Image (cartoon, rainbow over all chains, first blue to last red):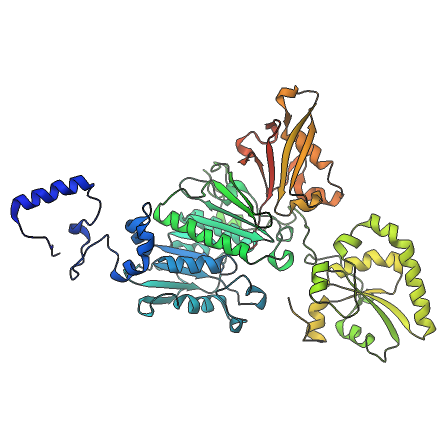
Length: 472
Length: 105
């Protein structure tokens, strides 16, 4: 290695040594890091890296040494959705050396409001492929390397390059350990408890810190698991809850900026983990409530010696992945869990309903929308009455109060219909045909046998009758 | 004698308490405690359990005489595992938060 030092003999060297001592001698140790061909030296960032990352380098407590470490690190984002899309974007622009993207899913129109990596034209396409396309635009084409890989071979970070490694089959029981093995940090941007526990267990087994983010509705949570002796997911919550007991975005809804914020903060925590910077959220959990603009950071318990995953005598990992059925049962979110099967003659198909609604039909149909008021206001069948199952029908007391007047109205309607030579039907519908069955069970005792539900709900209506009906 | 506590519900648990996220609770001191000792978490859970109107909602927060798995209990922003769990003693002005774990992404 050539050393470009001013010639000047012993006294000059002595002066330089004195000056170095004065300065603490932290910067530009040219014996270690000068670039042979360049007329400059530094910690080892390339000229392009200096150009791109000078601002974080200028932050006193972060500096070029940490930036270099980041540029030579490997981060894995599992789940490239509401959390993963901002996390992956910021990891890319911040200069991580290798970015892994793991997701099996395709882009849905309902993703676009919170997953700004994707465009309208991407709908139906694999998320990972679309993400690669978008993220590629953020870096120099000449520096970009894309690796399709399902194996566990190690990727070297090459100075001046940015590699994206894709895992398009998603995270499974069979590949989880292999997928995480090559990375320095893993971001849990997934959307279901089962995958979260699988990822936690894989990270514990492979010794990887895990940056956990989650968001539903107006709330988000963020923490760092299995880092610096801190707790893992199972130390805090030993068992996954039944998936049905967890609110999910497709039912409870989510406002896009909440996962946006949490995802960006996941990238931030991941970078702190990678560069040993600041104080991470290991052993603490940030809870954010966008509605009231409130947040708190809670102190969590430490690593649990009895933890089935990271404890002193961990359980055989293959037995950990079993879902814990029936541990806690269903929650507020509606129309997603299986309901007791309804007799076939209590149900109408979408085409049966369509026939009954025709102008020349000899049937009079009263449509009852049992979804939430927001869903009804968003898109509903014409002339349907909104009677939300959760608030109106699930409560048997309220129903008892209303039952007499309801029964009367139904009898009148039936008489009126038959006076016109028609028969009355009350058809309950919801999104998927689950809550509508519960509604039928609640209403039949009051309104009688002409109450049926729409089998398959609005999804079936769209599929079999009217493909212009909005899908959500 | 009663102890005044600030009790918060998050992550959907507020739905079982009339959608109130932040509440003030006045919990009667049990005969076995002196007023200075305050009330235990056990007493608070019993006190809250009585306020849940719909029987089917109880299991969303409670299991037996404790909270159900997946609900994190924080006493003054600290995991109750570190403060004494269900036997944690609470005093006037203490803040207890029930945080339901989120899984969506």
